[in-house]
Length: 505
Image (cartoon, rainbow, N blue to C red):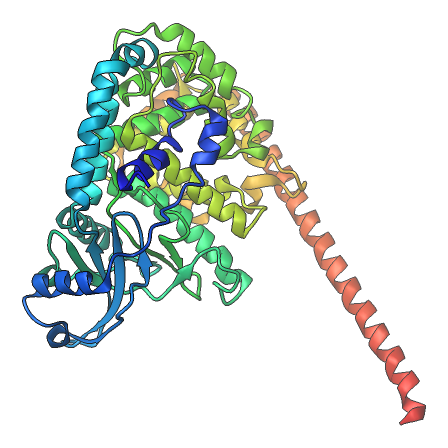
């Protein structure tokens, strides 16, 4: 009843643990656009004004009724007369922008008059900044010219990946209030009949995680609202994304800070992690970092230990982090609230499709290859921060990483035994062969200790790996024996039935 701005405010607060307590957030995440469509005749008039003529001149087919409606606009399905392609036509709800602008003005007025002092003392920033960040993203959703640019950039980013479908935008037919784009013939990824097989479903999960990480760590342009209605499943397990009004842009510098944060977390360097959060805008300059570093260790120390990674999930990690937001001057920048929401939503989709889903099994090989093959040598050198400490190669840290990767609930050798590490190792060899500085740093780390130390540690490491893969082989053999035993039982059962039926025949 309050209109689209406040629907969006509620949805936004559902992803802001720095502003709303957890039980309220849980309810707000259920908030969906439930608005009646505006009259189809108005939409037709908007489309004809944009294309400069009757609908029949441009479209050989046009569905008279909207296939989807939301608070900011609605979508029609049509077919282009020029090439026969099916398209989706997105029309903006009439009068929505003036209403949103008025609501944003009122929100900012309230923030300035009543909330700035509270926000400064509790979040380290003014409430008007939070409103401005929210307003910027909401107005971007109303800017169809900007959404068309987002579409073109996403399309270019994934053009070479046949597994990922991004709609082609018809710029000559689009404008500020009408957007014409390719129709992606997929279904909601959580539909029971979405996939042709279990293998297709597993393929979809892997592609979803990899494409999400590619957006974050490579493209720097991240889909901000990947709920099941915007992430479409194709029958063979390929993935299609739609609705690009809400995106997060991640700069190259912030990508590097995120990778630094991962490295510091892996190394249990919580002072370094706190400094990364400062650089990413979670902490205001001038804040005492020592208590925050200690609190981060208390919140994440157990989750990032080897045995904690068995149950690793983004939701557990964020829930622990959220508890700090009311005790320390930490806030979540708008762009990163979108990233966090996207990762949580994606993890939720994967767990809905496969309750045994383990994020690290898909993410680890991708991130490793991503860092090994990056063109920036400075980014590749960050890999060495994991295993070279104070100029010396730290075998203990490498073993700790392997111990993390071997943790498993099922006793099958864990993550490392399930990974396809072949491509990662090939990329690692290529990197060492081509990167002189990396070779130099690695050799320097090795030469700081006697050769016999490295031989002893390598023997211990190989023993651990041999044990992991032997365990994996035993699990595989037991599974095959059970399968063979089941086959024999079925054959015996079938033979007995034939003997009983023979006399009657």
